[in-house]
Structures are given as structure tokens and as C-alpha cells.
Amino acid sequence: MNKVCAVFGGSRGTGRAVAQLMAQKGYRLAIIARNLEVAKAAAGDLGGGHLAFSCDVAKEYDAQNTFEEMEKYLGPINFLVNTDGMNRLVTNLSTFLIRSTTEDTITQLHTNFLGSMLTCKAAMKTMIQQQRGSIVNAGSVVGLKGNAGQCVYSASKGGLVGFSRALAKEVARKKIRVNVVAPGQ
Image (cartoon, rainbow, N blue to C red; front, side):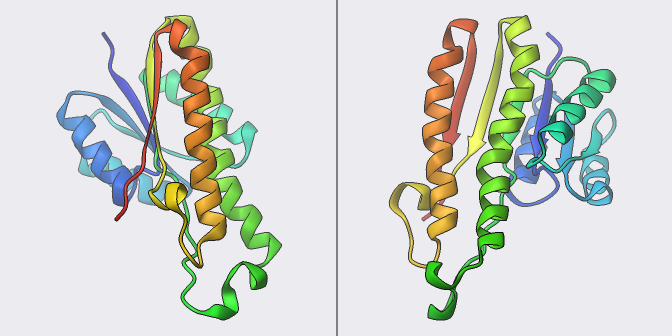
């Protein structure tokens, strides 16, 4: 079996740690980030055979094209990990929801929620054809319990939980697993 894993957000933090583990397990990796140079550095640190790609996950066309490029160079993607995300942590009252900008709200929702939906959609084409695949979406405990000053982040990660559960039910009969993890305190 050709083991190919795409790690969105794989250039740093949780995504980079996942990429390191998957490389140790013998997967060929696509490390995807907005910044191609940072993605290349992360892929290079893993050794040979791993590639880097740039993608704005909030743009469907970009997500689809990135999957086509990955599959062109690595083969069919059978494991997808979405760790892309952003959090505008609020530490004072002046920037709670009532004072947050619509632009910041939309940016967070597009990156944290819509982006994962779009990468899952792009991955489904190949996974359904192969009748197998695995997806792991990185949520957050804040998406389950909420946190003052993180209304938008909480909503985006909570929505990702519901989306992942529903998608798992949609594709289970195609032998595709979908899980969401909720790291946090």
C-alpha cells in the first residue's frame, strides 16, 4: 500500500509534530502551509521523499489544485490531517466579540472551519475512488466548552466537531474514517 499523507498546517506546531510521527511510520508526506518556504524547510527536516506545497485553505480552487499537484508528485492521498488554524486570543475586554471586526471573524471562520471542509472535500474524490482513507481534523477543547475572549475561535472549532461527525457518517460505507481531536487544557 502506498502510504501518502497530506498535513495541512504541517510546517509548525501540532502539524509539524504530526508530520514527524507520520514520517517515522513510513508515510510519504505533503507538508502544506500558506508560506511555501516555511513548508519546504519543514519537509526538508523530515528527510527525503517529502514535498512542500503552498495553499490558502479558505479558497476552494486553491485546495483542489493543491490536491491535484500533490497526487501528481506523490500519488493518491490516503491520509489527510488538518491542523491549519488561527486563533486571535483576546486578553482584554476591548477586543471581546462586541469589539471584534467582521473581517477578523470571517478570516478565522474561513481558515479554521471552511478550510478544513474544503480540504476534506478535495480529498474525498480520491478516497471514494479507492474505497479507503483516513481524515483527522484538529479541533480544540475550546470548541467543546467555550472560552471568554474566544467566541469566534470556539465557534469555528465547535463547527469542525459537528462537521467531522457528520462527514464520518456520510463516508463510513466507503471505508473512509473521519475523526476529530480536541487538544487543550
